[in-house]
Length: 340
Image (cartoon, rainbow, N blue to C red; front, side, top):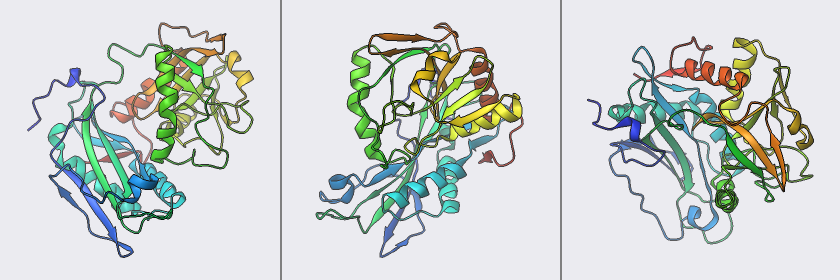
């Protein structure tokens, strides 16, 4: 029985749901894991996560499709990305097949919180892992907890996606040869001051440049960039310190296979940005946020697509990918994981 929730008024926030999945790693092995009711976590004041930020997370969504199925989008890529993150942070990898099964179990346990088709809302899924035993010397924890919770979230753009204004940040999001390519909690802690400052100055987001030379486009605090050239080519920045966005990788396939666009995944010099026709930020939450202007220390870059609506190519990309996710357009094999 679906919960009595005003789906259209939901924001992007935490709403406690009925079940969450928990698995524990002790003595060098994972237990079977289970769905539990309790949303609280009890741990030592000296837990590794509290002392040395040994934690990582993922984010994905469950949707109701046009024909009434409940599905999630490419969870195998989230599982693989968390495995890469765990290896870099000296954390045990939760087996990828069990990882996907934990997602399925958690969504099924909260099936009444999956918003109906057409509401614009979705069930956000947050898998995460952290070091839980006491650690006082600087070293990896011995024991870990892997958890998955869900929360219903409203449409990212109420009333349509209006282009945003962003700024070039003076801060670096990641260090050269650091952890920018993995989804570690510490990366997001690094970006908090920069985003608060950007918001105080009237900007929606930061554009981070490469930390080595500050001449190339990287990403924002929580999304990858996409650019469209004047001749309709999709260009996405390539760097060892960019998180490999699943939305971005999916958009590259959509552009080439569905829309017949040329696609380039390469280093993007900041000096090129003024010559692009369209710009957007892509990620799980919004799919694509169109960018209308970029401020660079007094210089203003205005994209020809303007401040009123998404550019034409960005709109086609957005409509096609969301159509695939919602079951209106046939998906490539393996992209849609059916839950119920």
